[in-house]
Length: 169
Length: 201
Image 1 (cartoon, rainbow over the protein chains, first blue to last red):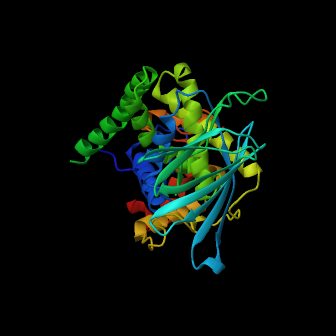
Image 2 (cartoon, helix red, strand yellow; image 1 turned 30 degrees about the horizontal axis):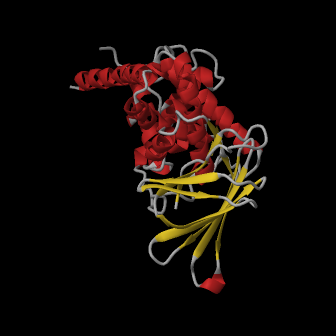
Image 3 (cartoon, each protein chain N blue to C red; image 1 turned 120 degrees about the vertical axis):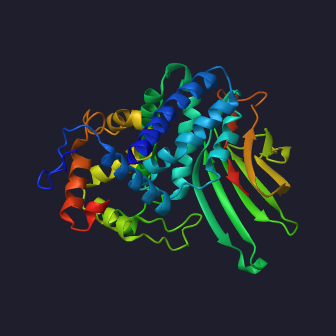
């Protein structure tokens, strides 16, 4: 075997060789160590995809705020806003004392719809009132997803389910 | 010994594309499990696409959820691993730009790679210890153009037979990394060769 000539720089036009594959392997290890994907992300994505057969409208995360309500001890409260083409969904999540979460929500424009909270432990369903308000008093911690059912009647475009990304309560 | 190992590595790399093509066929037939396998295999690649666009961890997660939802609607149009990987990278990149254009939670644009280490997310509190070889590679990568850094970071997570499809999806000329090495890897090797201790990589 001819030893590589150290004076010759590797050319961009040469075929990829084992040293290139080794370098790319090293680059992958570096980014895996310094910027790893959250290990549970593929599972949460699969959870969302399980809903794909429904006629759905995806809501996107528009805003998220985390605040500690000092007056109520160290309980954490999060507000999250989701936007879809036809609907804005705002929720406030607060920890209950029994390892569950309370979720209060509002739909805009205000309307009465059936709302399902899908969790790994099962589904909870409530209905929003005429002002678009709804509440889940006790939701188990873990992965959860909101599904706003199609309106029975109402403005055009209200006939589809609106689904939020999976979130961790 | 070395030859045997490299042959094994090469075989497992083309197996990855073959496996993806198999899952793709099954997913089109409606297999949730096959779709889940594709998600598990290619999400780390899409994570690097979103993060190299400068998104926060939370935004990167949203981008991945959106991309995989869209794929489901396009499954019938995509027939092999290269087309799938190219479509996913293109869509993730566009979605990352869309999110970035809103200006939310954008990380400061800092050219220093070490400063781009995530400041949140699981495991990041642990000090990442890079040995000397890794640190030399890290330093050399930091001397590449931003375009080359992005290309190599993303290609490193792609199935080997699909490198060219990834480069094309990132808007790099055909052959940037494919059958040929391309200027980014050539430049990286030149940088490492000029570092007297870097030849051992």
